[in-house]
Amino acid sequence: MQEARYFWRNSRSTAACYKRTADKMYVYRKYILYYSTADSLTASSFHTNKPSPKRPKLQEEM
Image (cartoon, rainbow, N blue to C red; front, top):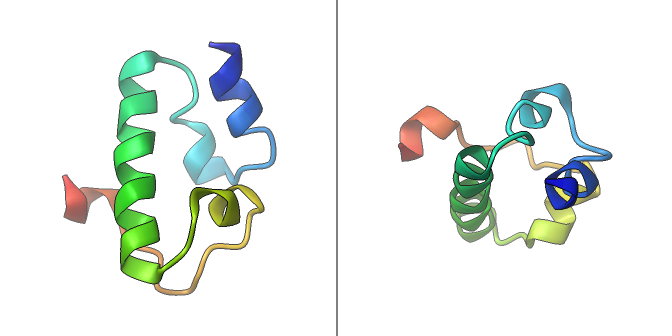
């Protein structure tokens, strides 16, 4: 998936491990939805590599 590679081009190492497969891309979308709702941020804010200090953990949502 070239799209996934593009999305994670400027990401942190913790997020980069989710860029390979369609299944993990689904996890990424679900995480972004929860993240943006919890912290009032958009997906584009996450892509600029400026997460808030209150960044939730994936395990808590799943």
